[in-house]
Image 1 (tube, one colour):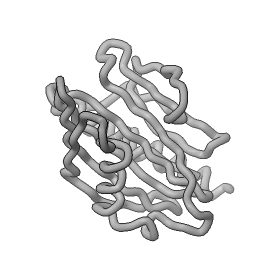
Image 2 (image 1 turned 135 degrees about the vertical axis):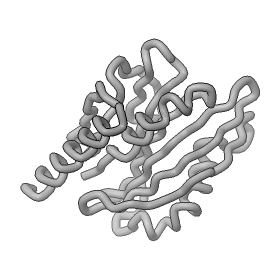
Image 3 (image 1 turned 45 degrees about the vertical axis):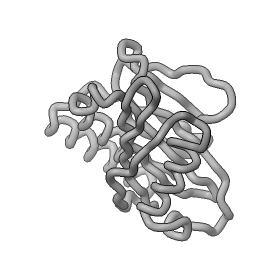
Length: 179
């Protein structure tokens, strides 16, 4: 328990220091200690009530199309993220089933897939270019498995804003942690 607390504090500290180094500031922490996840998100974003689907959705109060969500799905109890596949394989499955499912009028291309270790968990960081009928978007997702659940954080913005918010979105995705 103490190791988990110390590891979490070190992650928050390192992300905060990285944020200062890249000029990103004003991040807040979202923590769901009951379901076991946390992440940083920009100041000025608020929780949006949604029906079925995501566990939580937050969006920018000014740029309302910018959002982040967390979806929790079951997986077999002893299955790890690596058991689900490589970063590219999991990225393509997420693309097919969530980012641009059949009959959704969306197409998506996985443009980057990588993995990293944070504490005791492996995470896949996945980046997509998404085409909708009326706009093009950019998504970045962080995926992890913990306690028989697949946790997926997905942050999305328009392509026009991607260059401006890229650093913040990457910090948000990399700050995602499960316990």
